[in-house]
Image 1 (cartoon, helix red, strand yellow):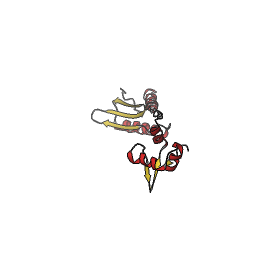
Image 2 (spheres, helix red, strand yellow):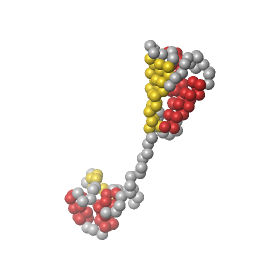
Image 3 (cartoon, helix red, strand yellow):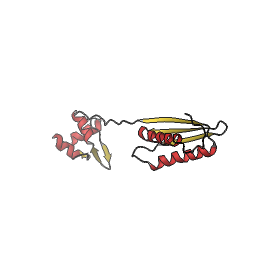
Image 4 (tube, helix red, strand yellow):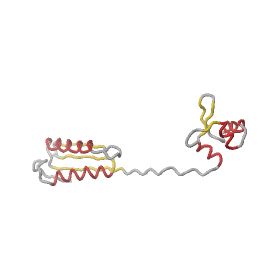
Length: 150
């Protein structure tokens, strides 16, 4: 039957029990079932629990999420806008199937300081950090000769 739900009659046949006995198990809470209309349906896992069969362990879900804050000093508004556009374009054009990378950029005009906050998949975060490193250290003038820090 695979992952299909069992009817009361099917469970009774499988266990060589009377249908009334299976219904009694359901009413007493010994066997979990879902009522659909006027009929009960039993999930294979609930039948296994009644029979004392070991349940397979839940699949391990391993997620790795990182939060990175990049601080750049000596950045004027125009350079901050260019960097924001670059980072957002890089994030939005690259999809590896992981959850989307969340990006927040903040510019403090008074201190001439920009912060870029990246939250998400470690690999995607690393790619954005490599992009920033390449742009800021190649002497291309994205920041027009301003100091970069971090």
